[in-house]
Length: 173
Image 1 (tube, helix red, strand yellow):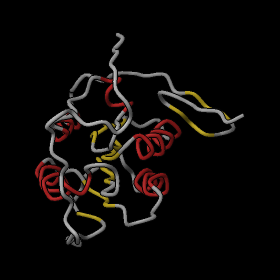
Image 2 (cartoon, rainbow, N blue to C red):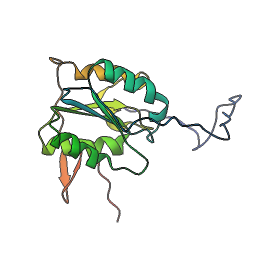
Image 3 (tube, rainbow, N blue to C red):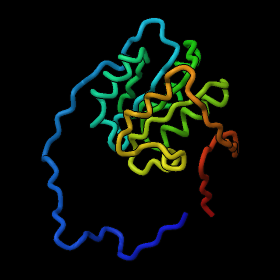
């Protein structure tokens, strides 16, 4: 598939209004781990990624209904370390709600521990989720993948200098 278009970066359509951002934003503090007793499915949520903060409450509620244990990352916390903790805690499935950076970090742990990975696209660009054909408009639908018996899709994973990558790699020369 190819797509083409014309315009310049940052251009707006004629007549389009610029959104005003609030001068201050109130952020609700949530517990870093939402318990789902006896759960072997873990979802790592990065609220700093794209629209993650907007979906935080609904995502935690929907995950809790499905018996999924949720780990909300604090500012500056590493998704890979949270995924390692979940794997060591006996996770049978790892999930990540975030952007491509969070997905790559958790995917590396899933590969190393041979665990299935569920991607909930809440990032800005969501390249990997887009490549998988996930619903970017309704990211909560991705939680259905935690349901036992769902079909899984296998993807290629690469490693360069000990770091995993899933859909692209960039080099600086």
